[in-house]
Image 1 (cartoon, rainbow, N blue to C red):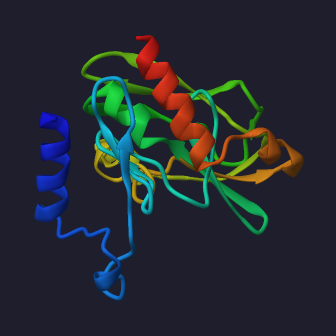
Image 2 (spheres, one colour):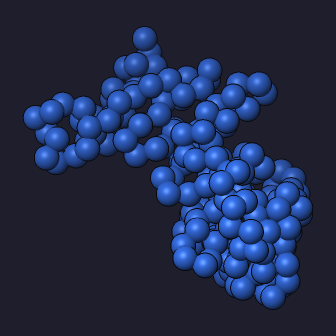
Length: 181
């Protein structure tokens, strides 16, 4: 009951509405229980209190995301991953023109909690790395899907993208993973 009241007051504070009479102002949404810890999910925008999952991206079970546009795939770590890591203080990325292999380490993220390897969700040639992360690794925390991207890859096997999860599957995967811990 307290969680429903909190969700309702939060939705009101954010000026979100599920009523049809205001549908011209805001998209309708529904709130559902997201985790056993009592978090809620705003289905229309793909956001779970605690982490964001974006439409149009593919996700690996190691918590990297891929945005495939034309012949380029941009890769980073998910909001869920950065949230679990805590404050990121250092990022190690591959060199441009190097190759990455699906399910193999391509770098590392060091946070105040731990150092974690970053696993490539696809294979290909690194055509660009986010050099801003050298001076501002916290961009991974503040903007994991925009300013905190890690590398851009020219995929060598675009079919590998099909093995990655969509937003709904990734959200469910995270729910189950968090419930198990």
